[in-house]
Image 1 (tube, helix red, strand yellow):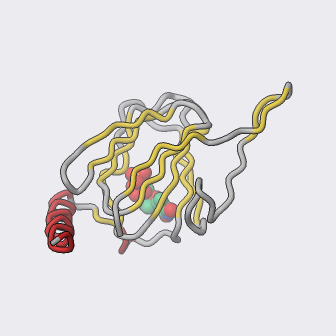
Image 2: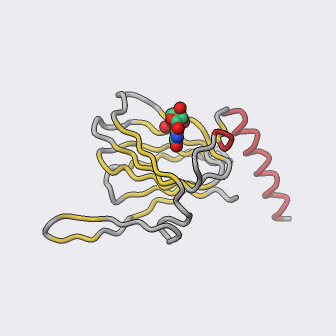
Length: 146
Ligand code: TYD
């Protein structure tokens, strides 16, 4: 699977009453069947969560209240930080990407839509293992290019 980290501007329906965002599975915004939803809240100040990659899981992250930062490290070592600070910002993550969630505001609620049920076997929790798998996938990709 190719690695994808994509920032999404989620379209909202707005009128004098306020705004509403609707997300449907198997669309451009949510390009997978949603099999699980979870949310992270009441985060202790200074906490860094995540620190893992997934083998097949696809996720869409939205900070529906407050703000937090998602740091993604790609298999080639490139690291990018994404600040999610408004409910119309989404971050789509697919493939073997090392992620950390940090800098949570007190009122942060990080909503995650996921393509698979919870499965500990899908986690890569060792950073060394992430680097090892990244090296293998980069070599494989270079081989395919020739
Ligand atoms: P953990 O993987 O530490 O969360 P994070 O990625 O945010 O650092 O998960 C915390 C606990 O919650 C851990 O015991 C596993 C459990 N959990 C579930 O039972 N189901 C889920 O869908 C998730 C994401 C976690």
